[in-house]
Length: 338
Image 1 (cartoon, rainbow, N blue to C red):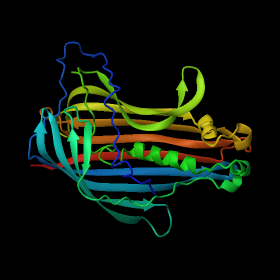
Image 2 (cartoon, rainbow, N blue to C red):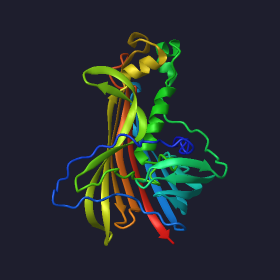
Image 3 (cartoon, rainbow, N blue to C red):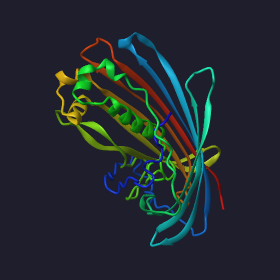
Image 4 (cartoon, rainbow, N blue to C red):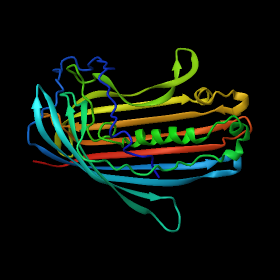
């Protein structure tokens, strides 16, 4: 099962800052002004299909074989441009429901669940495709919370005595899953991506936008860990042919590689001797491809692929207590426009 996918629907991430302009690799190429053109009355229908594959094992307990689980998530969403003022557009966003198919490898086979959402919101979008405001029009039904495989607390008695809960690992991994598949509300999922560059770009130009917040090592020689922005680095690839048509391509990358041991100890005000935690490495490598209409800069296709995982290592065992491998995929397609 997946985390609550739409927890961030009412609280989208604003990342107007953190824009960095790179150097063009083709100096002769004419810079492109990436401003989205909105036209009042235009309706768009998109489909999103995503998958998350988890493989879990517990080497310290003698479970050396990875046990796979898979979840498929798919939904439709619709937008209509209501008004345009000074380049900013108000669009009505509607997502009626989401379907989730879970396969844990049991004899009963995959189980598909339809989750009614009735998400209807009016969004204010800037010309560079950033969400400026969100107004709820209809009530939003949030799916029930789901669990992520976590080790039994009984295997870490001293951690339990310290008043800590291994559930923190489940929460962090749930966030990692959401970012890995690029699913969430209209402000955090793939639906309205990518954010565009504030400055004109040439082929090879780069800029960064925030996609989430994860505990990460501070760096610069420090071993401390803190919650920091997790950014996607976009690169303008230039005009391309895709599926037989002409588009402008934007690629993106996300990279996370941290050891959360210190963060875990700080959260529970416990020492390494009390937690018996040796290390808690967490990783994510993600690539994104977006194909935009050369004229309007509207996204026609989006593709996301990622790999990552987490390992829970303690001083009580030579082998990891828990290891989870993660693989995510998501694709977005404009079905119709009128």
